[in-house]
Image (tube, rainbow, N blue to C red; front, side, top):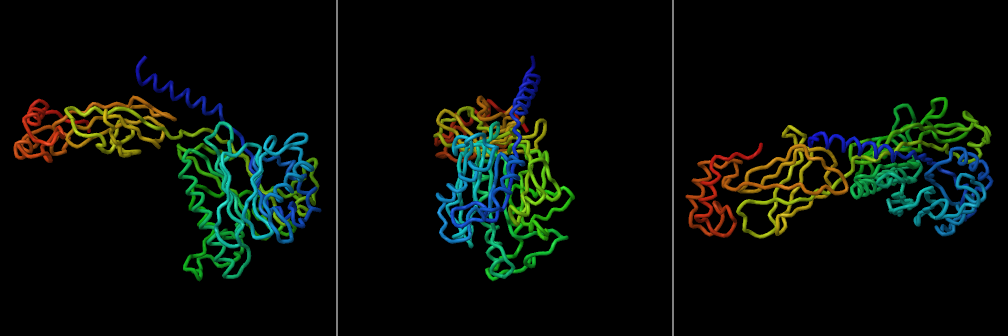
Length: 462
């Protein structure tokens, strides 16, 4: 069986395995208006909220305004209050659910003194933290969740400053910039993970809705007011969930006037896990009253409607570490020689990815962060002719045996051994290294002259 056919069958098998690992994940984002907390919460709202959460049955529930109406935030106490609510009212985690067994919780350590954010998940966390993004100090929640069949789902939520004053707007813009920077940093650490970004951002940039503060205003700190545009300077796009009758507004529940609550997800780029949006919506029990839910539940639960989406997350191509050996003909110099390795579209000179390869003492190298795929892999070192390995299949986590053997004699770097190279060696003959020293032994000598004469007329791969 030919190499091409083997590679094709391997890729087909890999795609089949990836599709078998597709995971359906339901995301719920909700500002719960202090319905649950340890410091004088609006506890009368809990039964109404519970009916909606039980109906929506999220795999990952992102919460803003966990807390109450008196100061004295303590994240341990708030987590205990959330545990009590879950164990008392929610059936989606099974009978007598226990934290870290049937469900997992992260509660922000930062707050405005009254409320902050939290994440409840059916899957355990790889990591969870909150990052300071400016006043009012509620922090920005950053988690990586161990969703089966994925590279770990990056999930974020935040609650930006509210209000229409210039100070509020400046705080909100700073919040947006901090959220953007956090998401982009985590995205760079985990380039194979899909991203879900949610929150109550307390502004909209929709042309058909009124603004809390004039967009494009230069703020006292010199920044320009575009909070939603700023948040979208991440690898995400806005899903714009709708109510059953087509309304996108999420606040207030009784007489909706604004869209403050968002779900954003990463587009498919061939490297991150792929996200397909199966469904999405703004839950309003006045428009959608399924069994077990009553028409007034949304208004009685919170001043915000819940927003949700169902995502199909499948393994993306991912990233690979490529290892191999580059044998440089007649090279006697030290380890550490570096040159550019190119990963090209097969049959072309179009570079899709490139990186510097550093050779060890035996010519071994290792390159991480190479997107999986099929490439023509090219490498050229100074004084050696380029070699291209056609149609190499790169798969994660590691692809080994990408080996090269490079012919020497290209003294002037034009990818051919010709009269110019012969002239270079003769011109510098007898010098202590430098131009014409094809072996890198510190001397331009007869060995270098013999290399040019032996390989004279050779042309490197294009």
